[in-house]
Figure 1 (cartoon, chains in turn blue, orange):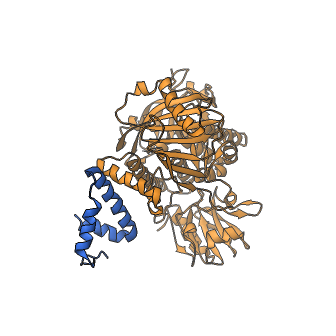
Figure 2 (cartoon, rainbow over the protein chains, first blue to last red):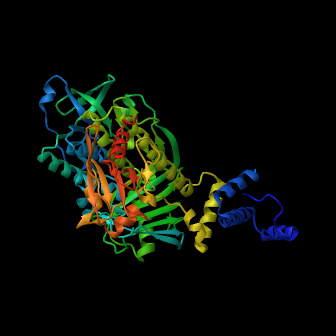
Figure 3 (cartoon, each protein chain N blue to C red):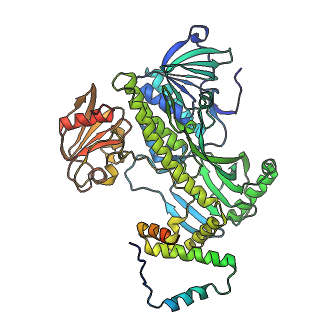
Length: 59
Length: 541
């Protein structure tokens, strides 16, 4: 089951880190980074049903 | 006149005038159009069962050129059942290791070597003309033993009149046209199937906008017998991907993915091809080895299938019915599975042992097989030829991650290799009632191979229905005029027990003539077996 309730202990810190990870990257580099990030997180989740729910939730 | 569309590698069935050419049309139970791997395998299977099969081919042997090269274990198991497998494996190049590169880096390698205890290897590379030659050799041998098989070379079907219960064919020959009739007409006449066009049937699917250059080169090279595949190859002008793979007779298959907007004529210029090949080979060998170009062509491909493989008494098999990209070796390998599926059903129908509706299950089961192949092939192609910027971004992300992290390697798709089709859930299959039985031997699956006696278990299965009893005993069971012959193996080899029984200590398996498992049980029960046989030939109540 996809968790759609707040789950990140330090939301502002996380958000800042996410944006900072893109600092200095071109649009193309950022897109590539995002793709690698999505794949890495998806593998960590692993559960196909949860991933399908996430695709739905992100629409 | 019969036009020559291509050169032949081997002349196997030279034209010979037959008496029927001067007389009224003769009716044949089965006419197979096309003497490729599918038509030949089907003719051989039918003939060995005693059912007459006439093959019409518009050439007189195996066509030269770049066609199928990669034959899977399932195909070799079928060929072994038909008596042609040993020659194929002896001539073929057995390979197990594949390496996938992204530019200069090797991302990963894989080893297809299955566990020991199988008659046939996972894959061999063998030029299609050899595959056809060995089938024809086996047909000649079967004919000598009395099998009612006939191949007529340079017999080109130019018109088809379908009367429902039978078809009339007009056949062009070097001596002019003649007519013959077929109760069942089997179209094994390839992706451009003239019979399909004559019937006005469509062949829909996706066209992939990409061009691939094939160069088969002859050279003595000490590269290992491995499949090497590059994404973004590091050598000059190699395109978006490249492949190097060994075939028999010191021939190496090289493939370059050139993209969509190319000048075909320019790219086929031998000097230009040599420049590409030079760059690839020198990057691997450190110098340009001596080689000759044996065959070059540029191909595009499509993934498509006919909506229905059966149209009354006209049945389509192989490329005429379905077409995929070459990545995954799913073309000829799936076509031979079509022949394997159709042969015994057609035989039973013609012998009056099964109803004509059994042939509907050929279409159902093999349409499912085609869908599976098209799905795998489309996915591989979408990975290799991303259709949008975003798709390319993800593709490249996978390749970059695969360099560093194991998790991304299963996402890298340079073709998912052909595996046997599983028919689980289709109407002809019965009980899955073996407690602790492994997935490998579940109803719908092909029989796994395993050592037995001095040979292998698959050598004892097929031809007719078999009732395999492992660790126990069964008797022959007769139902609807068919006998399932008991094969009692009280003390199975370890591999046989592991692959069929899993955690069980004994088990009973009903096996079809095409070596697919129909049903499995803990104990022998004659009436349950009889019911399963009835179901397997489409006579379930």
